[in-house]
Image (cartoon, rainbow, N blue to C red; front, side, top):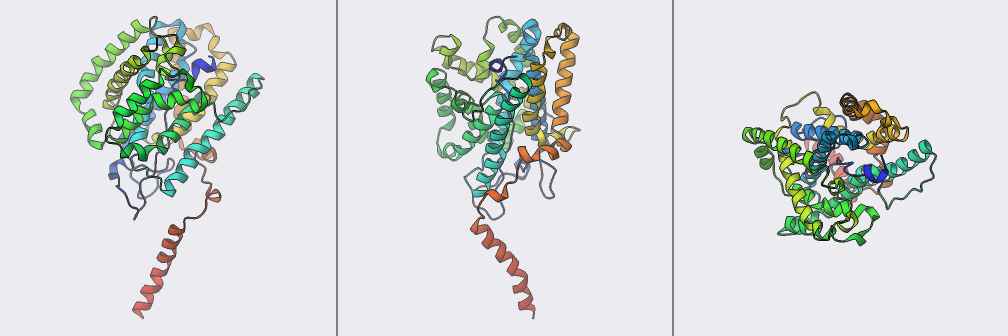
Length: 397
């Protein structure tokens, strides 16, 4: 599969969350059930919400399966329809969750450090690694460009921009209509170019802003029994509509990386498709969340490692593509397609596991304490805490 065709949706997310406010910090605190902590081994006193970990894991599995379908879908209308349905909502779902866990981001030093080490540094490392990997395997000589995200890394730069602008969106009275308007305008602005993949940053922006303003009660409503029952015919209708749309609708619309003019459509199609795809994405995202388990399951712990699965599975997909493994005829038959799908889901599951996290934490979640100046206020609090026992001993003597 070509780089251009495979770069969409590679997504989201997922997804290093903003840390909740530390004890004693000013600003609103998130409910305990919604607090998020640094991915990795569970830490004492930190409570994760199983629903969100389950949702992230299931979404990353869909991402990996979608990537494995890319080189096969041209010869299977059913697979192409499945691909279209998955691409309609898997990144919006990831981005909504990312926005939800960015609600308390207010530019505190600890949050900015996390943004740098959990988003900016992995972007630089993996953008470089993917280019070097391609050059090594294919013998090409592509230059490393940090301004033109390639393949999976676009989501990291998008998350970096979205999170930095969070305080602005929290100040506005009508942020969601504004974000939708920006997304619509982006689709008629081909001069935006490819720098930092700004088309995607702007066209996916409404989902992040929506997540910023969601509350736990909204997710509870989506998990009601009536919604789960209604989601079955909705998904069936979506598959039928996608099967019809395969020869009529350009799949690139779901990637949100191009303007209408670049897709060969009249300019007015951009805003219209933005609203239509957003309606489909939100409807299918609700249906997806409705079926995400609320309790702990065997894959709940894997939800803490979805960023690892997201960033690492691309090397497997690209290696198979570069080696021509998708060209075997038998893989383009139903059993072959099922095998590829199962392998993709299994591989990304392994890549989300704790052993893999331990090996690659240096690149995905580097500590980098050496790179930051010590917070004077934190040092003062630490010294004060150290003096407390001495004061207590003196008072007793």
